[in-house]
Image (tube, rainbow, N blue to C red):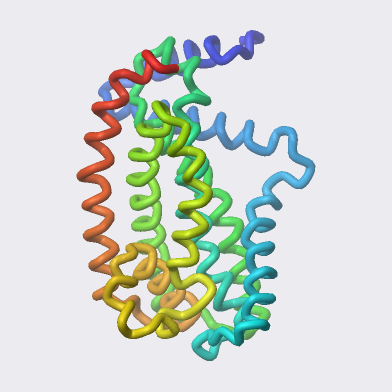
Length: 275
């Protein structure tokens, strides 16, 4: 156990998983072990540690507040810091999962080359680790609601449902990008830019009503529109999500999984050849 090399850890993980019966049990055992490893290693050399979970959305919030001051962006009668941050929390969960998972196969090549393991685990682990950051950011959002005297209503029960949908969308897109990015770095290089564009095309800085009427139909095909609006409605406005937008998001999630999962499974058979 004193040997901490990646290969020895992989063998240890493999041996531990063999004690479990059934493929599903083995899958979740591996998932638990690897998520623990990801979380322990993530902030090991950081001074601020988990504080980084809120630094990024807070920096974005400061930039958005400056932009809002210049462009006079409305916020549906909600204090703008609360309006923007309530969208940044679900957005950071979504984008953080995709960004972190893009390198998950190459970062775990020692395990993949030594152990027969479901390769879907690694993008899922990356997204799962971001959920911890999401919970920290969500706690800060509740503190902001308390500061601005915004009560928590009964529609808050929609928050975990919408959060699960965001995670499913993030994992689905992660599978596609991870599979393609393992072969061509261009996909990983393009990812940060695509995430920035996607955020600007989502109701993070501005309300949906600010989008010109002629663009509304096309704009609402973005699955993050329904998820961010639903999250904001349930938590800040104490209102039910827009079910029309939510159905669009759900259809997009199903579509992403129909394409991304088979793509990942097909390409993953040749990961060992390129790692």
